[in-house]
Length: 132
Image (tube, rainbow, N blue to C red):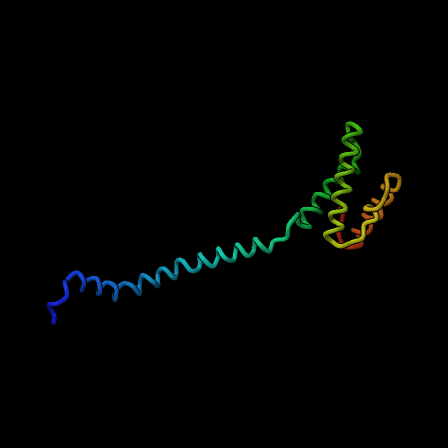
């Protein structure tokens, strides 16, 4: 009975019995954490909110406020563009904080006063527009 199997088949069976558990354990230690991290990263990316974050919007708002308050624009087009960008960023910040913005419904004549009311509403919500 001992001679009816070839030697190579016996060596292959020995290798499978001796080395396969070690190889499987090594593969599980190397591949499972990487697969889990890939899955977790995909899930985290999927759950990320679309659009800018509150921190980046507030940083842009402070930068634009500094430009609007400084008031040394070279021409009328630049001044109007900076004020429009400031108003848009102000409305975006109000949307992120869920604050009512009077600036959204103001016409051209009421815009400066509505801008002040919107800034006050953001200050009351806890967003500091002029940090110390």
